[in-house]
Length: 150
View 1 (cartoon, rainbow, N blue to C red):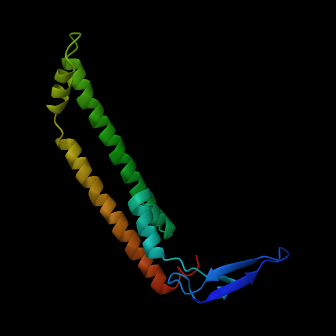
View 2: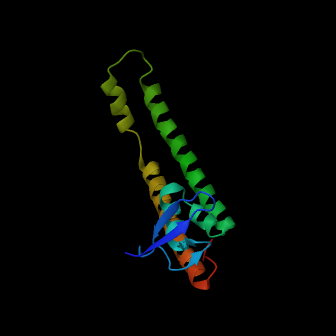
């Protein structure tokens, strides 16, 4: 394995950089190897695991990113409201006083969860669109040359 030795200015110490690792490019700027940023991968991972819509914002599609973030926020709010209504209805049905904990859980399980499944499915579609669009937009920016080094 080849190494690049770089002398620190004024410190008198040496740093060793392996230059044969695949993710290092062979280009060296200011004595340091340049690590190219892969826009497609980074933006897709940000949309998938951080916040849906963040990949679009990283790709500078601000309106699309804001629309996806707003959609996720609205799905979250609708889900919380629906869960509140299910639990509140179960608690009101057993408002007579002390009862076994199993009966409250049975009433919650008897609630209508179809709206929650619909919201979950719509969120899943929005999430999948966000990840796919972030990847494809990032790939397009890489091939256009806009994503190099940024």
